[in-house]
Picture 1: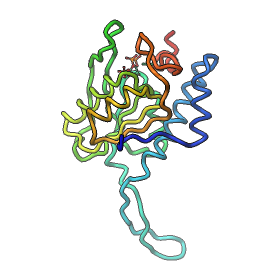
Picture 2 (picture 1 turned 180 degrees about the vertical axis):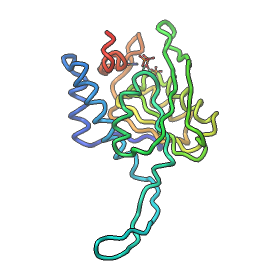
Picture 3 (picture 1 turned 180 degrees about the horizontal axis):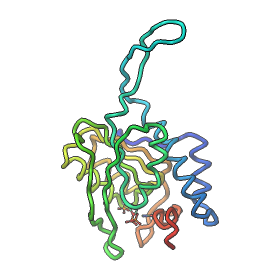
Length: 209
Ligand code: PRP
Ligand code: URA
């Protein structure tokens, strides 16, 4: 899977272990999701294009590189993806934010889209889709379809935990996007939860259970 990048940084690994812990409470969980998103974004944005601009230092004027952050769209998949937005915004504050609402049917585990609002000129932006969990891959595949339908061309998908089949499915159905995962876990259980995983990311971020 040429388009898949698994995080190797010890800080990310350490913070994922803290996330997994069932004793980690809502406030700390939210904080960790944000930190991991920021560290992942740092890795995922290594290839951002730079443009030289003129800058006047106290000594002299020179040409120096800058990222064109205005051309980015951060797109969380509701709900859990919202937990990652601030972490990415910490690095690229000028990025616009779109939202895609997708919920898995509790019986069939099939994704159901209920909302999609993306920034204008999506065809000219790098779209960074966020969701902490990539399980069957259904939600992620649908989210990418939604961005492509709106005209999105350059797309990255960032998750914290991926299951092997979800990762394979997303990579095969969308070979033209780059996928970043904090860790690849063992498998899905019969309820399509990731094992060992971290439980229900949305519920742990928002304290709904
Ligand atoms: C979770 C998670 C992903 C999806 C992953 O959301 O945040 O969006 O499941 O599963 P998949 O890869 O099998 O599609 P959920 O449907 O529980 O919605 P929520 O974030 O609103 O709780
Ligand atoms: N969604 C979650 O929040 N957790 C899982 O393990 C799978 C899907």
